[in-house]
Length: 120
Image (cartoon, rainbow, N blue to C red; front, side, top):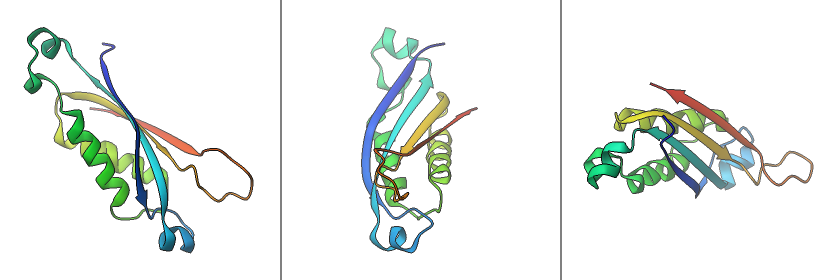
């Protein structure tokens, strides 16, 4: 199946990172999510109950960015995936990319990102 819902560029301030200034000052994180789901029933019936409400998923992602700090963006990505799969049984797999564009790595860089994908 190739059906998917994509959410791109969800941005919020979080306090994730291993360095004290990251935990103290925070920074903006950006998250993209790709949800694999059979959209055929919703497409044929025009019924929201046969798909997932992407507005709710966007809120979940924003809450996790703003939520309890973690050291690694890998951990944040996994936490987002687990929340989405826990709440929405119709979703077959989720890929989440967490961008940390303001990471202080000692060189000029446009973005650092990790992507995790999990299936049921």
